[in-house]
Image 1 (cartoon, helix red, strand yellow):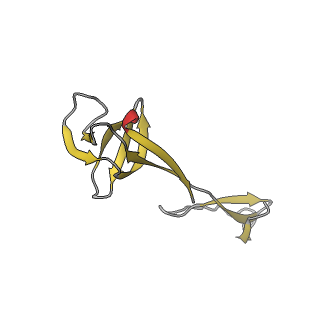
Image 2 (cartoon, helix red, strand yellow):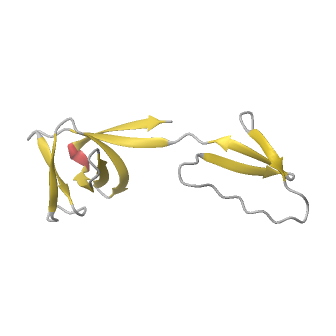
Image 3 (spheres, helix red, strand yellow):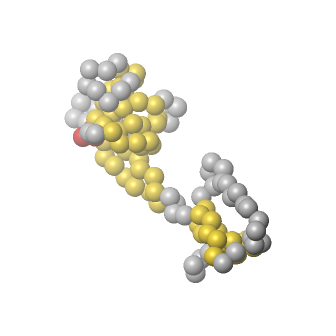
Length: 112
């Protein structure tokens, strides 16, 4: 509660709907009718392509036999969107989304 910021009060008998839009990284708390907001630390994972061949395929689905969408070169930075078994769904700097096998990436975690 140390880093929470007081933002208002809810009156008895008043129903309230508190929403947060995409990109808002705060958690709201109601304590005895008083509303506080707490900043949330976000963790994002990134991967850097590291393969002995010097590149990897970006695939349409998490399967070695799925369609190839692109060839991604070593040292390319990718944002990890989700993990699915041994595969990572990634987002490229050029805006493409696809899957890469986990052993082909070096993973980094970034905390905001």
